[in-house]
Structures are given as C-alpha cells and as structure tokens.
Length: 337
Length: 254
Image (cartoon, rainbow over all chains, first blue to last red; front, side, top):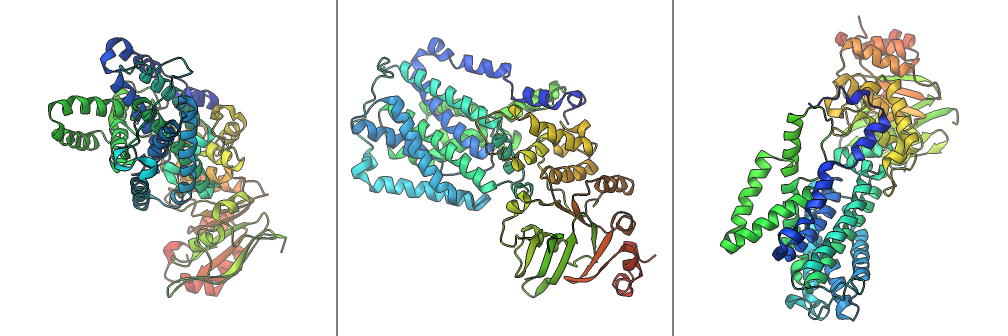
C-alpha cells in the first residue's frame, strides 16, 4: 500500500498533470539510446533491429498492456507493413518516408477491417482469433509467391537515401538513427494517447470491460480505434525492417515473431510504455550473445528466463523495479510508467 | 405514459424452464423513490438487468419516458439517462477514484474518443468528477486507487460512477450490500440527498431502510410483481406478510 497521505492534499489538476509529466528516468533512457553511436559502433545494426522491435512491442503494448486485448497474431500487421514498403521499392519507389506512411496506412487498414472481429471477443477466443488471422495471412503470403516472392522472400529491395541525403551504410549508422528517430516520434504519439481521455477509457476497458457499457462507453468502438492505431504502428515497424535490411520475408509475419514480441513485452512489463523497450533490449542482446555460443540452445535459456520472470516478477522487469522503488520511497503514489 | 420516467410493460424472461420475469408491469413516475423488495431469487436483479439492457426480454417492452428502448444496447440507455449500480462492486481496481469518475464524465461528454489531446486539457470534466466525489465525501481519497479504498467507500464510488452519467433514472442494486449498519445509514442519506429530478429505484433487504427512504415499494415474488404501494400499505398487506412469514431475519415481520 503506497501511501497517499500527501497525495490526498494535492489538487486534482496538479495530480493528473504530475502523472503525465516526464520523469528523469525517461529522459535518461532516451539519452542512453544515443550511446551506441559512441560506445558500440560495431553493434549499430543490432541496435537498429532492437529499435524496430521495440516499436513493434510498443504497438502491442497499446492493445495488450493498456487495453487488455491479447494477441498472438500481431506480426500480421508488422508483415503487411514490411511487404508494403518492400513492394513499393521493388516497383520503383524506394523513398523511405513515404514508404513508411503507406506501409502504416496499409497495415492500419487491415487492422481496421480485422478490428470488427477483434472487438467482439475476449480472452481465450481472442487468442485463437488473432492466432488464426496471423496463420491465414502467412499462408496467403506464401501462396501468393508471384507477389511476395513466397518462401524465398522479396528480391530486389533498394531503399533510397533518407531525405535524399543520408545513404544507408554497411555499419547501420543511418539505419539506427532512422529507426531511433521514428521510434521516438511514434513513442511521443503513443505517450500522448495514453495520457488522453481515450487512454483513460482504454485503461477502463482493461480494468473492467464489463462495466464500461454501464458508464455509457462504446467499448467496441474504442477497441476498434486502438486496434487500428496499433496495427498502423506495427506496420511502420515492419516497413522500417524491410527498408533497413532491404529484405522482406515470410518470417516478418510469422507466428514466431508474434510470439517473440509477446514474450519481450511480458518480460519487460506490459502496460508501462517502456516495458517493450526493456524487453526488446534484454531479449535481443541475450539472443545475440547466447546464440553466438550455441544457436540451438537459445530457446532453452529464453524459456527459463520467461518462467522465472512470470513466477518471481509477474509484472515484468519494470514492474519489479517499480515495486522495489515503492518499497524504498513510499511517498510516491503511482508507478512510474 | 409520458409522466412515467421508466416503465416495463408485459416483460417476460425465462432461462430454460426457470421463469425469472412473468408479465412484469412497472411504472415509475418521475422523481419518486422506489424500493424493490422480495425474497432471494424473486427476480429483482434480473429486472434491473432487463431494464438496463444487460439481458434481453423474451417478450415485453421497456420505455424510458416516452421512448421505447427495448432494442437499445446498454451504453445507449446510459446515454439517455438510465443508469444502474451493481450489487457486487464492479469498479476499476487500478484506476484512482478521480480517474474512474473522470472517465465516466468523459464518456458522457463524448470526450473519451479523443486520443490526440491530453486529459489535463479537460479541466471541466475533471472538476465535475471532483465535485461528484466531494458530494459523496470522497474528495479526500480521490487519488487513491479503487482497490485500496475501504469497502464502504467503494460502494459510494459505485454511486459516483452512476451519477457521472447524469441519470434521469437511477437503479441501485443493493447499494448498501455488505456495508456495516451504521455506514449504510450514511449511504442512504447520500441517496436521499440526490436531486429530485432523478427517479430512484433501489433493491434493499433492510426494511428499516426501505421504510425510511422509499416513498413507494414494489414487492416481487417468483418473477412476478406481487403488489405495489406505499410503505404503510405494504407493511399491512397480508400477502406480503405471507411471503415473508418465517423470514423474520429480513425484518418485515417483527
């Protein structure tokens, strides 16, 4: 029980503003995100992939962590974004920024269409439906090899320099800067959503979806909106991957990717904005290190880590840290996001 | 019909062979304080579920004022002013009291669809929520998470959420359920203090509270309306006595 003796005396506006304000730890996080340029210039390709995965995890956090909509098929939207950007390039339009926008629009459109099904279900049914959507799309992409290149992936992607100036280099310098910039901008957007009236409604749906209609909330409409936004962001993440790696393969929309991102988010802490980021960093750095030692054995460690986290810190790494912080300083009423 | 704030006309509902509502006719005139009583399993909560759209009647119609709302989903009925609370707390455990009520105010004012502006820009909504909490003596704990509030205050928060929807008709399902006797008086005092523009129907087992706070009483038994009248008429009615015979613990026969 974190005590609110102090908080109770604070006015409502001040209290809400304080909750939405930037914390020092957030500023530190974003500054630290710049460190790889200086400290680990050989790992910028990995860093760019982490940033892309973090963006993907952020989009899942929006639906899973903040709205309680579980998904095992979120890679479908990532894949649509990846193929949209890839195909645009193959067809002769390798301009990255418009590619991102179009990829986001395509994934958002598919998200909007599927959201009508998603909004009707909860819990176990939702897991099955999202899984089904993911599998369907993967098979469709495999089958349409004339379009997607099928099992071999899409050939001939070439991404033009960003703003006609910044060429993509072998070391991943531009790729990381690009991915990080997009991640940061979209993060600002998501942060804004979370602290909006709509964000509050999403938390209401997560906390007690049954009660929402009794306060007059159009729950399904809210779910459709957030699902569409999350799908568009996932699509942009997918586009970043195909643009920076200049490949798009079935792996981009496979079940493995849906499962991985879910694991990362839970590992880092769902519903905390930064959970997916921390999860992506830990997971991908660990994979990079372990798989160097013994590639087959990698999932053994991940399995072990996952069980340990869920057993001992059910709210993920950030949840555990927040708990620690609460125990140390009991004056803060709310968790840091 | 327009003088009635809420009416149920010939409402029927059964689950398989179990009849939970049989030809229920209810007319609530505007501004009246109604108590809905009856033994357990009489169909009181079911009737609230039917009127608020949580259940669909097999037959019959529900009117809110002159409007037939039988086909409307629950949230549309709430928007039109038909609001309920729950017997078992149905709240948002990790939202603070202020956040919960602000959410309900935002939903009513159509602000909850807005995702591009910060909540802090909605000062009126926050102020209104705070005023509702103050009116129920919850302002002092408005920044606490719901799950950390004592049970009695959670019951009040149920009512606060309902008030945030600006009800014309408020259906309270055992508002004082689980609340110690002393506190339940306070809770009903808060209900009694509600604006006279609001028509109130409450389910309650404690007959002292029923007789003190209701201007009219409806008795339900086995899915049917047995009788309706003033508290004095109900207390004197032999049929009601028969139903409650041997159920002295419920307070009617004493």
